[in-house]
Image (cartoon, rainbow, N blue to C red; front, top):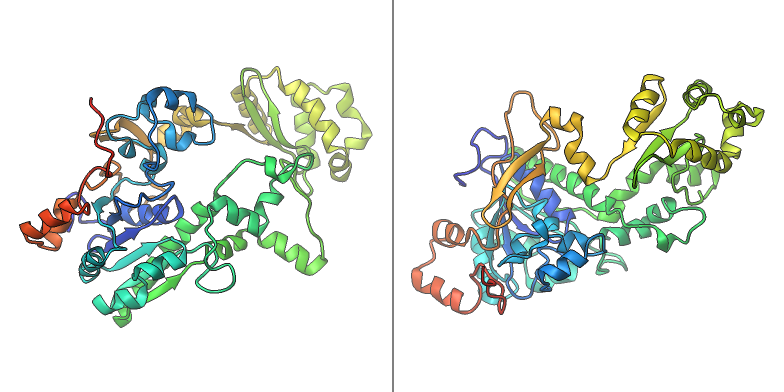
Length: 445
């Protein structure tokens, strides 16, 4: 078992084969790895896993700098906007969830790769994948395939829309599933087309958490019965539970809600308002008459706020749009953080809208030690978001930097599988084992 994993962690001794892409699957295995599971990413060199390590394209430093704020920012915003010799090891979107893991290279869709995969299954506990079902079935690593090598294996499959039905093989990112479930429409703005609403990828985060929970439940079941099993997690269906209030409202009352944007079904004022400085905003939520009176006092009891139309919750809600304009005109001259503190002391629900820089400087997160520093041989030293939860009797922290492509080939092929040197050399010659992608030799330093 991995020498870098603390032996006191609750999942120490559990080996997870990670065949995941993009975010939902990698987030699931990230959570398992953080609490002691040995997670081995199985990564093909050809074809490249799209939207994962960002290796499907090559850009220069100049192109990276020009991408600031663009749609590919997460893939192309390398540290100091420098792709480095091996940019696939410096991609922020991948490195955000790749800590505490191992990586080996192998194309399990090939006959020899499938043999290697089955040998790994025989000495593992869990497989996690979030590929489109037809890809998994065509490659031959479904649960029945894996159970031949290891009857106790647990296989978590995380397709977008399930393992059957007419949408089974639809390929989706999280934003597509948000559209299918109605969330994208709900959070769009009343005065804009839904296509103008930015991506949130909430489905990915939700799927990662419930996927990790499902694996733990299956491990518990196997501990009691000795039985392995397949877990089917249809990500879109999982996310529907987050919209329960909306579903019930339609079921009980026949109401279909309109796009909400920053509005609330009953609270007003409710939104984000500009503050002094560039892109400084504060969120304010008024739910009661008492809170409205406190906000009014903070604004200095302006004449417009004394209008009797605003005295009741219903009145404020009916005139919410005109109130937003008036509050924004006042807040524009206020210091965001000072206003947040003042409103909070008055019992008004408010909070600063923080960007990434604000989060890293947040005094609350810093005092709690949320961010942890990791040093990667290729990506450098950076602060990473820490553990999602903590346990009072189990000390834990981040213990390995984001894994580099093929970094653990020797460990997997030599120690776990005991592959003879001549076979390993043949696999290298055929492009199964490497730390570089074919035709993508490291750039000169």
